Length: 448
Image 1: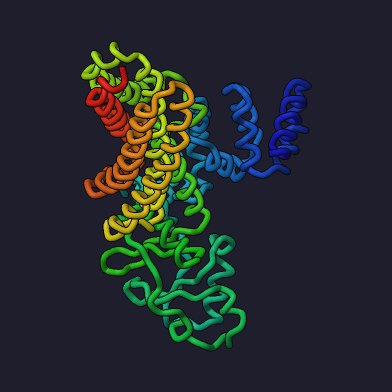
Image 2 (image 1 turned 60 degrees about the vertical axis):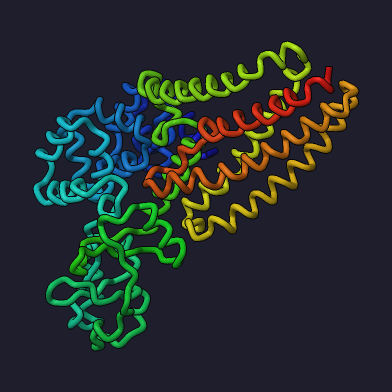
């Protein structure tokens, strides 16, 4: 953060002084991630000026680091020839990520201007579904034939342009089928005359291009590997997904889950203009309005009781609020468990029992505290008993819906993260109001 702030200050000072040559040198000595972060602090015209001071390799690194909205605004301000020249020097998977953010017409123009080989590789990646292993894999995989010797393999590694970022040497047969993998460090400790086919690790963990990127990330994390090969249905080697891509996936998926739990769109960023997020925000607020009307209609059923005993209105928000925090806590843990693969339908009863026990225990604890407060406040033991009972009921409901709704959504192939407080707390609002006002209505003659 400090390096980014210092770079932003340096850029601003040099821009104001018109010292573009000095600025170009400062940018050359900076990391692409720091430059990308600094660019966000400047308006688009100045971003373009800065971007054009970078060499093409560095420009590609900056594009790969930018978030969607800043990336889109910057690229739209550049001409297609500039963009194509930069993408030609990027890794195909990074270039594909840039192109998928562009309008279709502009993306097609850029692809036409790119070098044929690079363009074909990028188009092949774009043919895979979004958020799949095929979309994020790199086709530039380091591979040798199983009949090669260690010496030949080392020579191949030396000449390969992707060797610097490679972790494994993959071994294939005559038909490009994946035979095994060999850590690069193993090569330098083995006799150069040894065939690599006899050295490689068999039964290599691999994924198909159709696999969801989140599942790929779980596998990499589970087995502590730094790269995973991608193979087709015939087990032919197509590409490789490295740990840096996996880190991006984990960050993206975690952000998406957090934002959806809060009722925001999963792909929204702090840099999105208001017009871009208006529709997404409005949808969730309409949903929230509908659930609020539903809760209000339950209160309306007991309008007579509230008119007879206005004190009931004082305690209603307490019941709703406690139910809301209960569902949020449970749903957050369950949704995260689903995202990490720890929570499955087989664990339903185990998790449900735990959450119901917690709901009962915390509900009783809150009931005792709230009952004492209600009695000291209003001097009515029965009212204290009613609100305490309602709190226990609502905590149990919160536990039940917080576990079952995310699992139900997962079963229907719907992202469980949308089981946010906007939806789940409706259940606790309705049940909380119904239990509290219902009990009060049944016993109102003893309260008046």
